[in-house]
Length: 269
Ligand code: ADP
Ligand code: MG
Image (cartoon, rainbow, N blue to C red):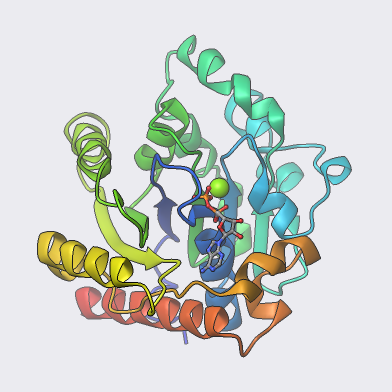
């Protein structure tokens, strides 16, 4: 299934938005799980000191001996950091609160913006035969997020279907442009995905119209609805895809994965 992408390096995608609570972690986990379900090999890099992606995938703090902090700042080997998860085909580079001091420590290094870029290009990365690497970014435009963008082929932006959703997007786009101009000219926008969409709420529809009007085809056709099963799943340490495979949230994340892969195949051909 993945033959169109496999011969290349894994596609590295930052899931970013400096606002908290917009669905970054939920999207990283469930897009990752949906891609894995589709037969792709996926690595999720938890780059948020809160470690929500790690917890949501059932990797407990005591099992996070080596983390993304070690990958960035201690020269740790991928083999020591990457953990398997309950989802076949989905690996995790876990995070702990250690990562909260990373920004300051990275600042003191010469390759400050390239630490994740270099870590993900260790020759050992080939051992995993990865198709996708998803990076779950913290809710800021800090050096951690810049590291993610420098390391990435593209940025996927979850947009909460709520008032003010589009505010702050210009700031995010500005950061993308800066990274393009300095460290990573090839950085693309993978797309914008509307999350927590409520069909009964006029506001959701208004945000969708605004987003499509402003951003056009950058906005994925697939919309992730607000769905209680999605918010329950992390407390069972599972993606919603595993927790309730036929829930509206699961169906949406599978459709998002398919839409993204289709788009990538289109641009590759
Ligand atoms: P972020 O990583 O951007 O801070 P999260 O993915 O952690 O955002 O989502 C914030 C909260 O919203 C979490 O409690 C999450 O479970 C919930 N949530 C995310 N997406 C949905 C959805 N589609 N339906 C219902 N709840 C959601
Ligand atoms: Mg998060």
